[in-house]
Length: 125
Image (cartoon, rainbow, N blue to C red):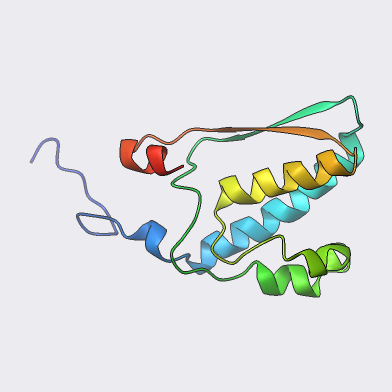
């Protein structure tokens, strides 16, 4: 069976329909890492780049893990009333929302670059 691809998701992955716990964990790490990165290395005239090589379509139909994390974080508490993040956000939306926050604060110019191999998901992105 040369050329057969095995997938743990079956023939057509439904990965982007529902965010899994490991992805929610990755997104919480992203929030902390990008925030720390921009605060330590940023400045109003500094460009910082974020590259997402497996961006997917940018959002999920069902999500978990970001709203509670943001709501319980001391740092993100100052943004709580703005309802910035949603549990359905994927890494592209999270990084773009962070870029807007840090640009508005003149903290850093975070430039976001996305790539997605799947043409359909790339167009949705």
